[in-house]
Length: 166
Image (cartoon, rainbow, N blue to C red; front, side, top):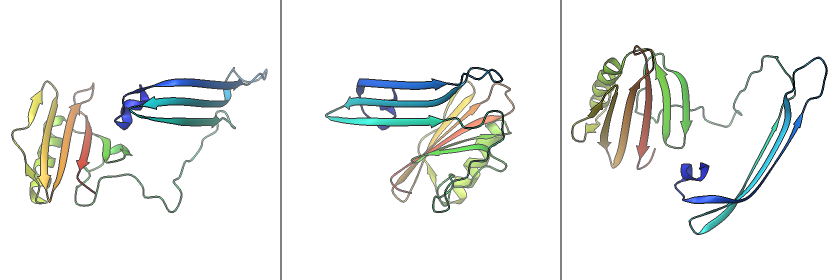
């Protein structure tokens, strides 16, 4: 359940979802408005989640830009981004992205780059099938690096998690 993303154990208590579907002869049936409200209990707390989605144009290119005062996602300062990384996504202290190289190449880049930046590997990296996971430490921070092979075997998916500050 989505509450697990926030470290809580819980279930929705009550939820309502309303959706409006376009009824126009020249377009397919498409949801043009969705409104969701969920009440939940997680651990010893309760809360509400609201979601509203409006579709205003269909088959029209859009550009989504963050507000001017919001930092664009990426890796924390001092942790290098893999060259030509794509699909960069940041959620809290976790950053994920795709790399056009295989797991071994990406792992070698991060072993060199993190060592050069003063990070020390903790123990031996865990290798299983097409995935390498390693943990690094520096100045009271812990960095977990997970590199997995994409379906094509030639590219990789990378997840970097930082604990202890940013």
